[in-house]
Length: 72
Image (tube, one colour):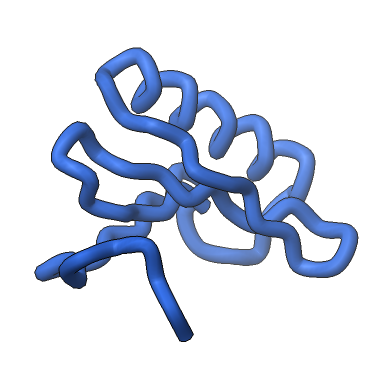
């Protein structure tokens, strides 16, 4: 699959502010969005939101150096 990156991350980090399942899905989404807002304020960039069918999944972000990570 073609990618816009010139190099792969050395490591891919997934931040899971809601912990492990089972989840209350509305509460999980609020926790994720709060963490995304905190990371945006710290200099990260939101790239896109991913959904699983109708369910909110995760947010793909970039750190200030361009390394991709997910909050979900």
